[in-house]
Image (tube, rainbow, N blue to C red; front, top):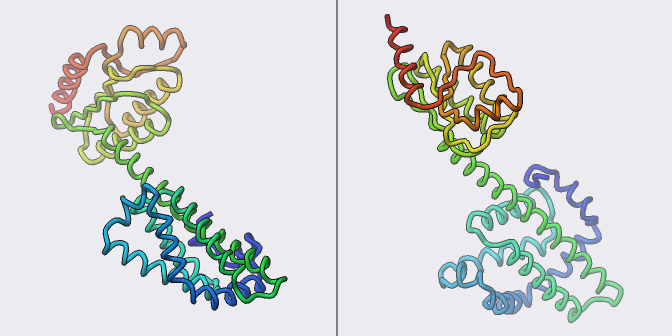
Length: 293
């Protein structure tokens, strides 16, 4: 659920927040605003004992800026005017938490502390007996509503960051290099799975298109395990490069890998292999030279 794209009405329904709840929160806000300075002071006194305080709030200027933002946050909360703008503001809070790296544990604990403080305001306030618990419940619903948006946004941004980092690492691990005019080379180290195989194929085909290479050496001497899936990935890569007019040689085929391929009964077809990269380079250079004649 990407809450910055969802209709706020759906969120209100999901958290069973009614117009009556919003009216109670607005009435609560009239009394809570009078004590907000005290509540925030008590909240920061509680926060000081947490590890995140020193990391994020020890600087006086930062603390003053955050407190000002927090005042605006609760002022908007107390108005209980839940609409697209309300959701968007909560999304911004989630994005800010994700970017600075404030832990979700601290955020959850902080919202729980405010819930306790707000409940105290209700119990001490001028509310009819029947409205006290109803008001506490209404405030709790909107706090959960806010938390869901912030956490969803936080998780989405963290996931995007991890995906981008993974993609960057994958690109770094698949550096298709033109080591000679018309000759591409890629050493593979580690494990080849379906995703990495696609990345290798995409990077290779793109490089072939850019360089018009005639020969591609794929060195697998650093690949620890070759099973049926890995062999099939390698065969697909060689076939794809051939369709672009580029011959692929798989080098670094150790005796163990060769034996595994035979034991598994894998048909490598017309895939060209060599035991060492030196042999692959010698053959590749000769092919490139022949292509220039």
